[in-house]
Image (cartoon, rainbow, N blue to C red):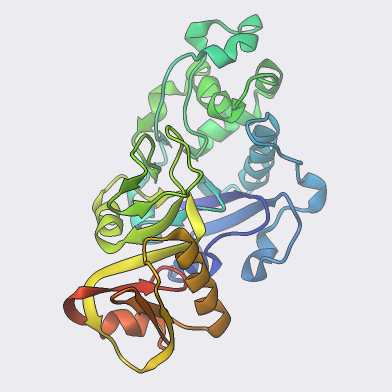
Length: 327
């Protein structure tokens, strides 16, 4: 099995070094990467995987162009005959499992959708071509097997059917597979985790201030226990909507190696503005993270891995990492 990772991004990948470590941890070349980058820019190690600029589609939110861009990724990846699964990802996604676990979990005979529902009223314009019973709804962030991609690429007429439908990316692939003998080869479950419909504050994450109810959460703070609970769930392979300034919080630890590099007073670890400023400071100074204790941020020069390895229990403070998630 070889997995094709298809990144649909605007300009950057939020946690590139984490993704790079994820791929390089594999002892054999059982993955390929394809990136549709809307706004051209430097992606460092990932530059070699970008689609040529003439294949890039100028996408818009909720527009059919998102499907057209995804199709460019699928078409490019399908040309590699060894690719068995095609994993659609956004810039805000992160893996929850190792590459070896994902390879062992996926079955080449199946595609995987996080949800799978019937007709929605926003698809009314598609009724010129299809009946309500023929239309399906599913998350765009799915995992397709090779036979499913073949069906999708051989039915371009669905782009016409759904060209005036808002969020067509949540309908076309599921509808094609439903109507062309592939519906029996779909498994359902949240392989790409995303949380909806929660109060503004919830243990495990903090919402953006302008976040609306009934919309996906943009994570700016993740605590250790919440992240571990996701990693322990066998179906959840990835999660999305990780804010670029997201920090991971380690509760009930106080003793860390090294001296304080900087100290900021009167700061709150659950305030998005304070978190964003601290994250930028860590990146600018190359600090591994900081300890929050009695409304004070104590920045440390040690790497995130060193801070985690040498922590000792104390219930009165919190460690927050300033860089990527720990490897």
